[in-house]
Image 1 (tube, rainbow, N blue to C red):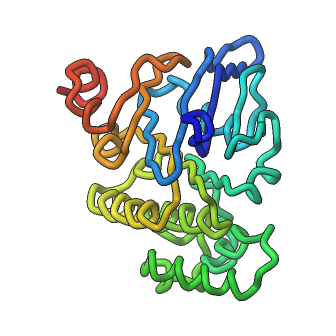
Image 2 (image 1 turned 135 degrees about the vertical axis):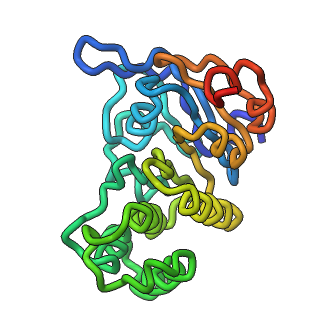
Length: 241
């Protein structure tokens, strides 16, 4: 099997524009099976735009997105979920007026295996005990950390092979961030690959096998998570070192 075929996700020369504004200028990256890949960079660098283009929430103006070697560029989000792609967006995107359990079931709405869905509900509650305690609670009344847990658990209900995570630690207390990153390690150990956008660059690089640095819509650096964590340039720009 060639290195090309080995990628679970392969993005080549991705360009995205919002009207006259070019947001991405030829972004190329890949995620291999079982990997955690981090995308770090300053606010406005194009990190969330990259995830939104991959998951079909916005259409790229040019470039190629391949999922398990299948060309999926321009496909809509609902077409990509059955292909094993899930996206937990920034701002969480949960249904605030539905209960925790109802939100989780919404994550499985394209599935047709009732017993599998019940098993995955149980798995969600095992992964996130806080959600079990609040299973009948309306999502809008949860704390920020609990809402973030629910967003991740809901994305996992579609049984993805690849999970896109946008700013999972945003606005959360350090203790909750530790909990969420521990859970992500466990989810990854179960075989789910991840592409992680995270403002907390140190945390992201500690978790990631590999990482890319995005600056004003371009990849300017890539390498192992620990290598980038040790890089003086990365430390200066993103780690306050």
